[in-house]
Each structure stands twice: as structure tokens, then as C-alpha cells.
Amino acid sequence: MDVDNRVLDIGILKNLLVKYRDVILLEYSSKMDDDEIAELLKISERTLRQRLARGKAMMQEKINCLEDSIDGTCERN
Image (cartoon, rainbow, N blue to C red; front, side, top):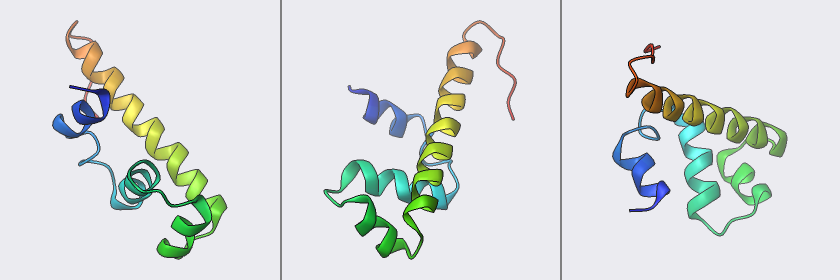
């Protein structure tokens, strides 16, 4: 199983706010350029890039938390 499927399987992407989930799904599962995604979502390209960065950061935080929980050090937010 690859990393993308693991992220989906453990619900990390599913639990993101829709505005972050949508841009991540479109960015990585479509062949659309950033300007096309921004137009589709009716947001600026700058907002698209911000949402991608924030969404990825949130996902990384959840992944780190899951890894840490093996050691009992993860605190749920």
C-alpha cells in the first residue's frame, strides 16, 4: 500500500476541513493546473497555494501525532 492510500485509509484527509481537502484532492488527483483549480473553486491562485500549504501542514501534524502515539506521547487536538 502506498502513502497516498495510507493517508486515505486512516482518515487524515477525510477529517480535513473541506476547503483544504478539496484543493489537495484536486492538486494531486487531477491533471489540472493551479490556475484551473483556482478558477474552478472561485479562489485566487494565492489562496489556493495557502490552502495547499496549510492542508499539507495539518496532514503532517496528524501523521506525526499518529507516529508519536505509538510511544504514548501524542496529545489529541
